[in-house]
Image (cartoon, rainbow, N blue to C red; front, side, top):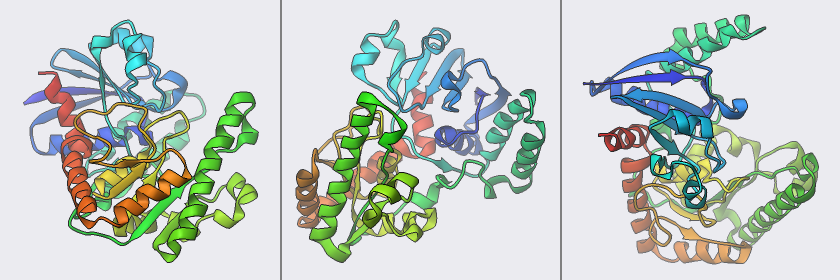
Length: 348
């Protein structure tokens, strides 16, 4: 039995997939997990870093959206798994051979992983003014176990995302968000305006062309309600249970790159549900065979988005093959126990 020491610094949503994976593998008896707290490293305090000691290896799991490699973490580690894996950035780092792509990330939890989040939260007892809030959160985690997740409404259980790849679905789902350009300045504001424009025009075009087959719109927010009130999605669809039902019932699911070119969570969710996918070109590398034409179709503007959607809707065999390919990729590279197992195997 392999012994794994997890150095937990956060119970943030970005780490849920990893905690869920270690918990699922530990339940099989293949590994024994020891939990410790640490606040030594957490770039930006974003709750996106998990460190581990495994068979003499010092392992970093960096789930940040950005492609930046943290120099202190890289120096500490023997192996550095990076979600936002940009080959150019990796090649320019001090130890490119130590850095490997982690893969697609999404908010998910499993039975037993509440222990890991409880341990991470216990670290916050040491910080000023947090003792009472943390004690309450830890007590709730202990009392409810796997029935409670402190990671918010963006997470759901492993099986809540999964769908039989044989299920064809009918509609086209595009549920996205805008980024408020008034909150930043200069080039960053221009970038947000352009991103919003592409998303808004895509929604308008699909709504017009597909009619009732289209599901979704913009997530309600201060800026989306202010700037695009006609495109704000029904709040009921945005709620996690309804969104998951709509996703699993869809024939085609559309997504886009994140604010800093990250592979968004919706992409991983659509793979977990074995759906046919249309997405902007991926900027970050993922492990294994996950390619345009097989696992997804690409678009670069609203018109090419519409064309890709029509291509999939008009070809039952292509959609079925894409669903099967994504189901296989999910089982090998995205399901929480799969993504963790792959990292453990690579250390042998």
